[in-house]
Length: 417
Image (tube, rainbow, N blue to C red; front, side):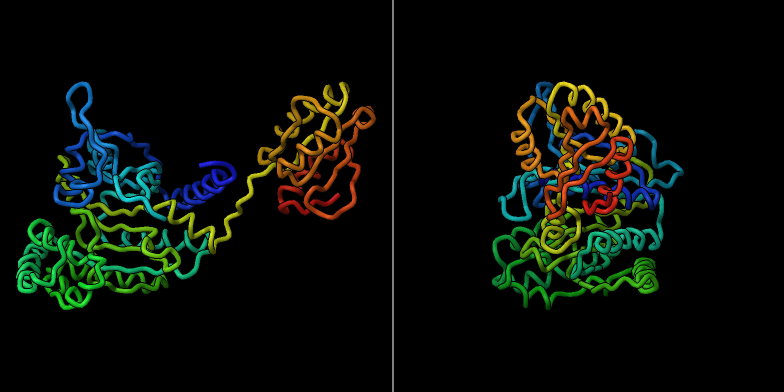
């Protein structure tokens, strides 16, 4: 991840951080390594992630450890260990690399980055709606269009058990039409067959029984209330009865934000409710919901149609020619940084002639060259040369340079004198 791309990552991360914290979510920092058993118990031993994708090894103490393939399990483990969930509501977020041994392709990497947003102790559909609204507000803030929301409900455990029986019976009756992956999942995790991307199975999947027909009244009421919240909040959604998600811990609400601009890897944000996970991992029964955003995919979308500024070049490059200019210029540069924390000012180092320093200024991508020679240092002023605009060079007093540069920062480079 090299400059200037790293600057774009930073601005995206700052944008997301400001948004989630404006909703009261606080950062939790999680370890990259966890005990393997944590992911087997939470994600599910018969999921693709645990069966085929985790980076797992035995350490010197004989413990089986895994590079985290997702963040929710570690967040729940940390919350249980430190007593965050007992008679409390928690809104947490985290950011960092995840690891899955997949076939690398555009939008899918073996090391990838996620932002996770999790809420604990809130049972109602209002927080489900809040999580969805967070996504909608982020896409709008990044200038993204054409991102659609798909929602579904998985009901509760008893409803899924009843549905599993009906689905297995249906798929077994059409066994000859199942591909190898679906045949394997038929015995271990039949709901995942509904998530197949094989076009030859699309018609078969479309004819499968619907999970919503098995919902208990409480789960159905939760789903209807969520849709009511989304309607009142003006969030357009598409109901997708085949949306099941790839992790075993989900129940009730599941959702995905999808873009058609990214090809096969079009999901940029996915989440839902996982009310049983805290108890499953040894804590007290705690309602919970959350989502994760894949940052690589989101950045691809931002580059193609967003409005996040890419440049992290300096606002100005300070050219200093002569010993007096050096003596005056470098302390003055520090004063500018004190007064303008957002200023990106690159001061020449390593000496050099006027021409060589000006070449460095141009190569740096700076908007302005601030030229300080012996005469300028003695007179208390600088020459301002515009490197990216067809404008006449200006003379600015050192006492007025701070305000001059403030205008450069605030107007994106269209400086005034």
